Image: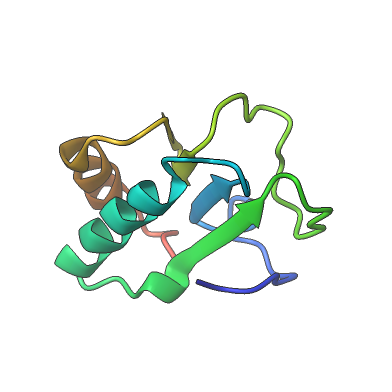
Length: 104
């Protein structure tokens, strides 16, 4: 997982793939595994994931105002909350890859 970066995507987000997590989140580890599996299925490295701890004062530019549940995964314009279904994550990754602005 990538560390805090100061770059943004063409659409102004801090990353195309953002994993919001917290220390007490019981499903975060499982969610990140599902996300990493989906990415590897399509040849996208795990380094494309921006991991954001909402409890830390992470100043990476990722907006946490709309995060109401952990885990939350944002893949491009898709927002997936709770323990994600593998097919939903796969579909979101495919839609993101098909966009010209998708970056790793």
